[in-house]
Length: 436
Ligand code: 5AD
Ligand code: SF4
Image (cartoon, rainbow, N blue to C red; front, side, top):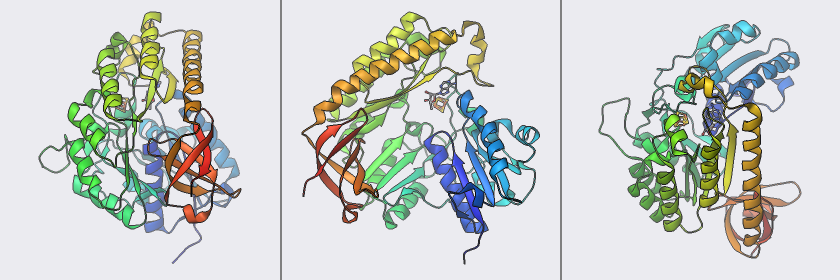
């Protein structure tokens, strides 16, 4: 039975937040009869799923909910979820009294209980949702995201996540396999396994059971017959042991694209960040990956201007960027976050102009790299999973190493793997013609 209640949900931040939003929507659909709308003015419930990893999205939250409050129809409710909800809790309602409820990043299963309770705040970071069965989260018909753990046990000194998502608990492997199987039964051919730190998987479960490993989980998931592609994010460079790299290389279902968050190329900054690896370790792991996995694309996250970062430290970052030849770089300027250990380094904070200049230079360096590398793909043939068709008759899909490709096509190609001859490139995508 369908009802007229409509949910509008806005997501800020990372891929875990995207999946959390899909879980929020499916919980509200299943238990409270909400259906989603893209039109804020039609919504009976407006939810913003927030990020607190840097300061900007937090500021954005308050300006956005102010806008939502102006646009919403009479009687519509507003809820704030996610990491900023965990972090600010009831202060959100104090600052914006029109907010009806607040649900933290680790309390998604509570959404159905609080949605009708004015002033409810559910933000306990020791809440254990690792055994809660959420409906499969689908990005599109062919691609599903499945969480493999909650929380993070690392204590990277710049990072607020351990304070908002709590300690790391792995979801039991049989539950993950079942979730992936369910998604595949509904037509998915690709799965994205998600966790703050995927390759530390299996160290702690909420029930008593022996330890497990991420490598074993990859083996389990890849046994699902109709599943064609496995992706995951984020692995931690520290835990990229040989066993993991070898499994990555030989398991043909694993997508040839890996996210290796560098953060800094300087061993002394990495130590101050408590990342647990050195510049040399990172270079060694990246080289081993490139050696064993042909066509591998490596993406990364980099923070510039961490407190105490000297020009020499920064040059080490540029050096790693040049040596690894990252295929995509997400660059950030250090942003001091509440309750993080790096706040103690306040005196060593880097002036903003220097941070901005470093960021700009890094972006430029990488742009030049892509301008050099991408045209080399013109004339080659790539295989893509066709995921969507635009009204102008252009299909879009991703290669096995996760490059987006556009070509003329038709809806009979949707969900199929097709070969495309590359005729043109941008810095981030390919254009081509489907080979019949
Ligand atoms: N300042 C800047 N960037 C940060 N990140 C995490 N915390 C901070 C911070 N305090 C970046 C890291 C991480 C990505 C998701 O966000 O690079 O990998
Ligand atoms: Fe934050 Fe480090 Fe955990 Fe990633 S691994 S979520 S950067 S503490």
